[in-house]
Length: 145
Image 1 (cartoon, rainbow, N blue to C red):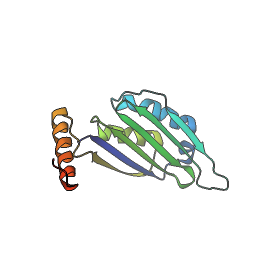
Image 2: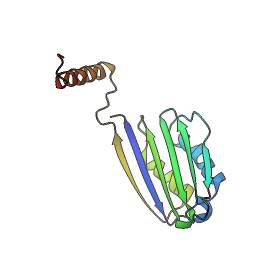
Image 3: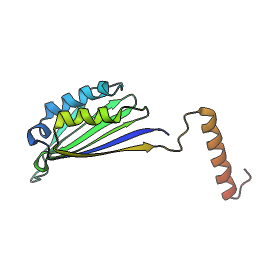
Image 4: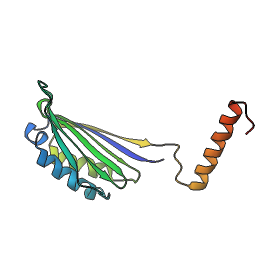
């Protein structure tokens, strides 16, 4: 397996928190340390105010050595979505608890996916898979493998 991917959706969260760029920045800035990850750059957070679009919001991400953390908020809908993707295991419940404390949704749902089920971490195993795939492709193309 390559790594875990946490998907979190929050409902009925306070508009003031969801629309506050500074608050979202602070949450993303602290988040990697909370779950034992390595921040490699400061968060990037942007407020979106589309012309005539009532679904404005704040989006942000922080790149970590292990992958990334991203959030999109919709203050008028009191809704947010957040992803944590990593090549390293992390405490799912600690991550969820941190976000819930930061954004205060009255209701939330989360899922933890396993990404890259067939991704080998062992280089010898990886080489074996690649060579096997190459031979199968060559045979399918009518060339000796």
